[in-house]
Length: 286
Image (cartoon, rainbow, N blue to C red; front, side, top):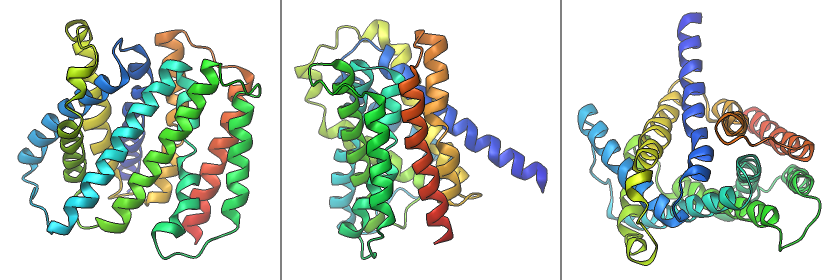
């Protein structure tokens, strides 16, 4: 029993590590953020389709009513990825990932607007703590600063991700997680294909290995492992463990990009991640 728990925990940590590579890869790949997202989605969709066929998952939609939430949530997912990569390129991996991790509290604040749940005042307190954490990340608020722009894009990315999750939670509940991810990446690939004719894609040949890594390792394998881990852990427990994602990202950025986080990043990040853990534990008890 203990051995099985250790294996499941290792799988969840491995999923978190794989997903955290998005920070280094998003910062490192020398292409426009929009182009990176298209190739990430396209490659992930191919890998996920092969995996779903291998596992013989049912790929049929249960209802025509699911077309709209699938599409809208996928577009918010695309916006989440694009703004996230803008955050990484404008600031650094630490600030980009930590500002993104405001999304659990944003979800908690927005949930009563989407789903018939009672508003809890504790979410205001957690929201204030997150706001303070974001302020500590960059106390000198100057819109001309790339760091500030990066943090703002990170929070916008978190907002888009929160909307995507809430739409899916409200409308789509009867699908395998990997199948859901397949449809999301496929819709993104189709909807944003004009990007290839607008932005520069001339660096594709040199950046292809990193784009493949982003599509396969980060997106297809990482998210599939994460979904698989939910068979053994509650969403709250998985969320708490996944909170180490920015820490993994910062460590990878140190070794591969030579990015050294400041003390402001450390204390602001600690406050943001603490609110994530508090909300995860609180929601589990609730």
